[in-house]
Length: 65
Ligand SMILES: [Zn+2]
Image (cartoon, rainbow, N blue to C red; front, side, top):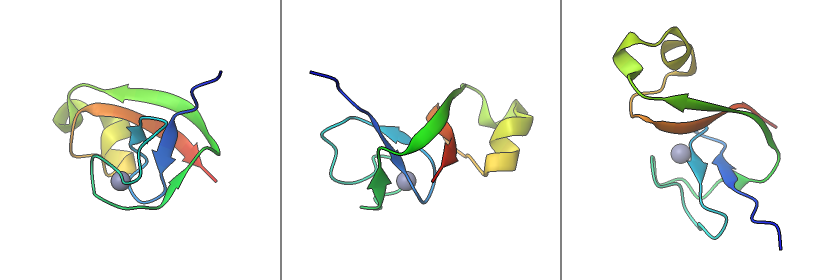
């Protein structure tokens, strides 16, 4: 069985496959339809994190459809 992780449509945070709400922002708008996994370790130093408006370290999707 494939465990498909879910990306939040609001903040792009990658949540566990059985998540009902986003661990990062609490949104219930989660989707399997995302691409590009980015790990942000130091949001303050990261141009990508700034671009994506990421404030917390973690795994994020580059594209959420
Ligand atoms: Zn979120």
